[in-house]
Each structure stands twice: as C-alpha cells, then as structure tokens.
Image 1: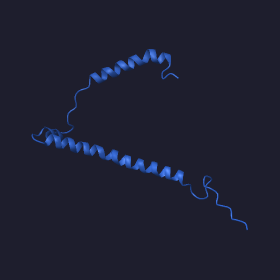
Image 2: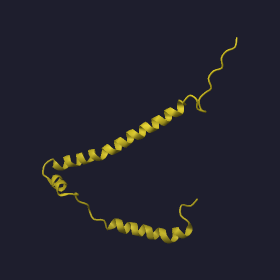
Image 3: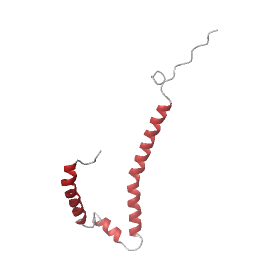
Image 4: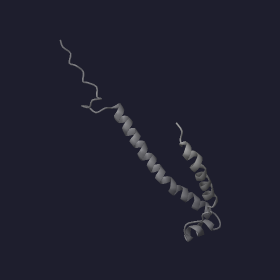
Amino acid sequence: MKLFPGSLRTRWLPALMASTILLLAMTVPCRAQCAMCEGSAAAGGDGGAVYNRSTLFMLSVPYLLLLGVGGYVVYAFRRARSHPRPGSDDAPAPPEPKRS
C-alpha cells in the first residue's frame, strides 16, 4: 500500500517539502519571552545555569504526572483482565458441589 497516490506524490509532495524547508530556513532565533527571564539568563555568574535547571524541572513535572496516571491506567486494565469480576461472562464458574 502506497502512502501517497501517484498524482499527490508527483505534484504536491515536492512543493510541500520545498515550502517546509523554506519556512524552516527563515526562522529567527528565539530569545527569552519576557524581560525578567532575559535578565535572569544574562546575569553573570551561575544565574544562567540555575535558570536552565529550573526550566527543565518545570518542563518535567507534567510529563512525570502523565507517566504516573498512564501507568496506573495500564496497571488497572491489566489487573482487571487477569482478575475478572464475579458474575461476568469471563469469570470462571463456581465448582460443582460433590455428590456423595
């Protein structure tokens, strides 16, 4: 199975690639978003390194939370699959009473 049909691949794909390369080449280097951040990063001494570490810490927290919630969901689904609820169709039938 081809990813792009023939006409799309021959006409639009080169134009899309050229425009993407052009847009990436025209990007301007980004600076700090506010004056306080720029001043803190440009401060002499250890100010820039501390600023970088705090930024990485703030960026890591949402990913760690997402990882924790996702891990719990996977755990809950796997546990539910291995331990079916009583009364469901997947639950094993209770043992038959022994007749004497």
